[in-house]
Length: 453
Image (cartoon, rainbow, N blue to C red; front, side, top):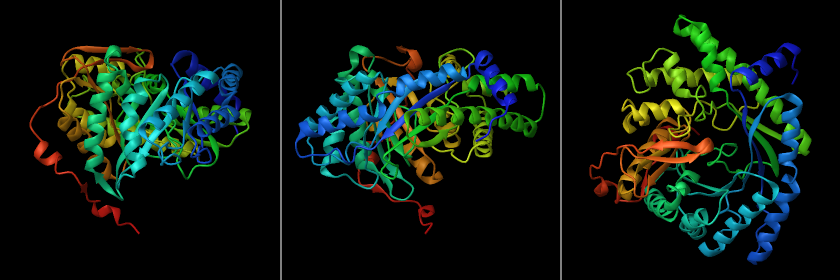
């Protein structure tokens, strides 16, 4: 890739004025050669391999930050879905693996390590069931470990048995971490059509078709896009789309440059740049504010889904023009707790759970960082997951749910996690009975669009 002087100056301006940063550089590491019948040997292999590749990740990333003047907010690791290499282990042994991952991440200065995961869209092995059962205990006994479970895909359909199990897992995780506003649930993502090269926590994992090790980068930049829209003034929607595309083109180029330099410094291959616009709780760094700048009074107004669809499409088009290495999730994220504008829309009763679900049909990824009353039944949570999975499966896109039944909290209360996780208003959930449907179990068959051979 070639960068001219004007591009570098423009990037410096975005960094200094418009809140642009690199949200994460995530090193993916395969652990497929670390399995052993002896748990202690497996733990030793895991620690040694992660340290071998990632011991200097934080130091090297900071040097690139200093060299180019662009902040890298997070330095992270993703690993092979743990249920795959360690499929013969029990729940208790999986918990020991989680503790090893946590201690290793702490040792090298990583804030999160992801991949405590299972892919069960078509069914579950005994090992996958054991890993899933261990999730609440693993997350309540670690600080940095993140978990994800893929329960559906366009090719396989929707595994309702896995969804039912995950609803119970979420409830138990909320209870076991109730002293911290059920924060354990913020580290669990339930996917449909999960991708193998996602750099964003908590849903990242290093897929089985990925190389031995690689470096993926996730950009940010809502503030840059927001300022560009404000500067554009009264233009029509086609012109506005072009302005968004030109802006995202620039931040994609900057993001790939930083990712490639960090990969080079660590002596590993560069993977992908994820062009998702990832908000933060900081004012002016919000997807909601972008939608309002496009002309909506607030998120939740009629037209919100159309505006978000246009934003998401413009982001993807720009990324593909800017780079041949676009991957991951790539689009616009709409988490509640991590976006100041979304939080305000919920607090103002302008944004409901139902409207959020509609919005997820046109954006990346899904219902993200949604707090709900702690006494919400498992069947209702399972229904929320199933609805989101259906959107993903029918539309052949990645969708996900990261939901927090905040223990002891009711609608209107707040949970506050600080930092990038922010604060989440507890949203109202309709309690209409669904258990006669949900408890049928089995698998919702794959849609006709799965027959693409």
